[in-house]
Amino acid sequence: MSEDDHNMDIDDSNVSCIKKVGFASFVGKPNVGKSSIINAIMGMKIVIVSDKPQTTRNRINVIYTDEDAQIIFVDTPGIHKPLHRLGEYMVKAATQALKNVDLLLFTVDASEGFGTSEQQICNLVNQSRTPTIGVINKIDLVNENRINQIERKMEQGVKNLVRIIRTSAVRNEGLKELLDAIKTHIPESPQFYPDDMITDRPMSFIASELIREKIFQFTYEEIPHCSSVIIEEIKQRDNGIVYIRANIYVERESQKGIIIGQNANMIKKIGENARKDIEYFLESKVFLDLHVKSKKDWRNKDFIILNEIGMRDDLE
Ligand SMILES: Nc1nc2c(ncn2[C@@H]2O[C@H](COP(=O)(O)OP(=O)(O)OP(=O)(O)O)[C@@H](O)[C@H]2O)c(=O)[nH]1
Ligand SMILES: [Mg+2]
Image (cartoon, rainbow, N blue to C red; front, side, top):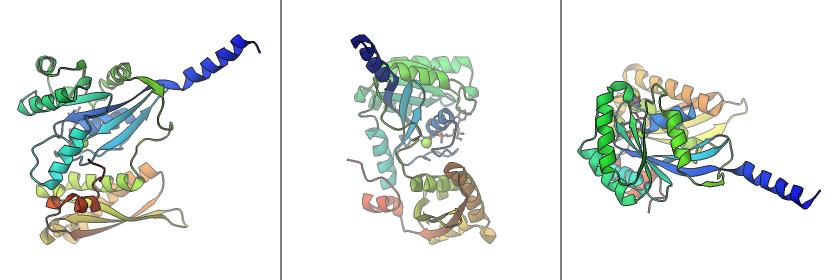
C-alpha cells in the first residue's frame, strides 16, 4: 500500500464518524408544545405531554441520531412565575438549560402570540448570548397573518436569532426544516452517544413520568399539579414480565380518594394506560403495582425532600 493510499484510508474513517453534533435546548412558556415537538421528531413518546401547563418538571435530554447528525434535545419545564418550591425548582432547571448549549429553540404558541411572558423569556434568551432558533409552533391553529406578526416580534426581540421555523407538532409540519436548521448551527464532532441511546435518564424515570402523564391527562384542577410519582421497585421476573411498584404522592388525604376514584376506577384507568405506554417503551410485558400516599405540602419542601420524590439533584 502506498503512502497516499494509507492516508486516504485514515481520512475515510475519520469522515465517517464526524457528524454535526450538539445540544439544543428548548425554552418557552408552559404548554407551547416543547415536549410534543421532541416526541414528533423522535417518532415515539419519550417525554410526557398534556393539555395542562407545567407538565414537564425536570430537565431531560433526548438524543436524536441520524446518518449525519446527533442532536441532544434538552426538554425543559415551561418558564412561569413560581408559586411554591417545586415551581422555583422547575424554573431554575429551565433557566440553567440556557447555558452551555450550542443552540436555543425558543418556542412560542402561535395561537397565543408574542406577549409579555414571551418578552420576559426573550430577555433570558438574550442574556445567555446563545444562538437561537425561533420556533413558532401550533401553526395549524392560526392564519398566516398571525404567524407573520409573531415572526416580526421575534426578529425585533431576539438578539442572537439565526432562523425562525414554523411547526405543527400534531401535524408533523416543519420538523424536517427544524432539524436541518439545527444541523446548520451546531459544530462538527464525533458523536457523544451510541446510535441506540435515546435518553440520559434511567428507565425508572421514564416509567414514573409515563404514570404522571396519565394523572395529568385524566385528573383536573389541583390534582395533577400536586401529584408526584416514585418508582419503589423494578425487577424482571422469571416469566419475563417486568414488575414495577410505584407510589403516587398527593398533598392531602382527601386527594387520595380522587386519584383512586369510585370503585378504584381512576387508579385502574391511570394504571392500564401507563402500563401500555411502559410496555411499548420497554418492549416487554409489565405488571404495574400502584399505591397512593399523601405527603403533606410536598411542593413546598426543600430540595432534599423534592429529590426524594423524584426531582433531580444536580442543580447548582
Ligand atoms: N393544535 C396543536 N396542539 C399542539 C401542538 N403541539 C402541541 N400541542 C398540544 O399542546 C399541549 C401542550 O403540549 P406539551 O408538549 O405538553 O407542551 P410543553 O411546552 O412541553 O408544556 P410544559 O411541559 O407544561 O412546559 C398538548 O395538549 C399538545 O397536544 C401543535 O402543533 N398544534
Ligand atoms: Mg413539556
